[in-house]
Length: 311
Image 1: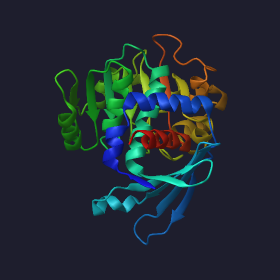
Image 2 (image 1 turned 180 degrees about the vertical axis):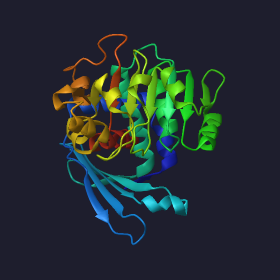
Image 3 (image 1 turned 135 degrees about the horizontal axis):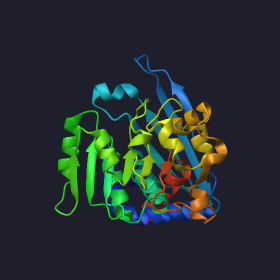
């Protein structure tokens, strides 16, 4: 069995190539039940969570991601989420590879958002607002830039120093990246707004959104979390990565449904619909679009398959 490290994932998984591999995964499908969540007592301030995410394609591969979420790890200067991915042969069950979980997750999550943007963001998008400064933020910026002509990026975070450091690290002569403390102003001027936070209160408001904006909501993986308010949801054409996952876990979908702003039937489609050509994405230039991802095991499997082929 091969061991594939985080650095090997970073080197091997090209954003454009992985976006296309994800498109094929959603087009042809596979077995991917909802993630299993188990609460683990820690005797600390917060309980931990153990997550199991299995997926398979008959006759090809089986995979499972094992991830842990320890909220108190930040005080220990450790990652909050850690884990590993096990890839198995689909014909014999033989273990093929053990892959660094966080690196795989960051890459596939960013590329899933980029896949959504290919269908939903305007083709002439140049200005991106990144809301959040965590480990996923640089991958989201680069993944969106791989599918749209992004050349101006603003980064907003609750800790301005983190936004400054990330902007300095990513800034290039033809790819301008700056930090901002003016979230409203940055949102009003953005073509794409990408959010990857743990916020439980809306950060993006509907009256900030210019016609034609694409809103990409990546954080908020619990029913209590929100990154956009009801007004933003109400004015947008809404898509999700998977209906089942979004309706079970995504506060940005569940809460608007509970308040009556959004009906289940108002969700225009998911990535299965888009990849198979069963639903149209953006319909016109000035339309506001919203893509909400919660992550699903099929995405991990597609990324793991690619990693095993390339590394």
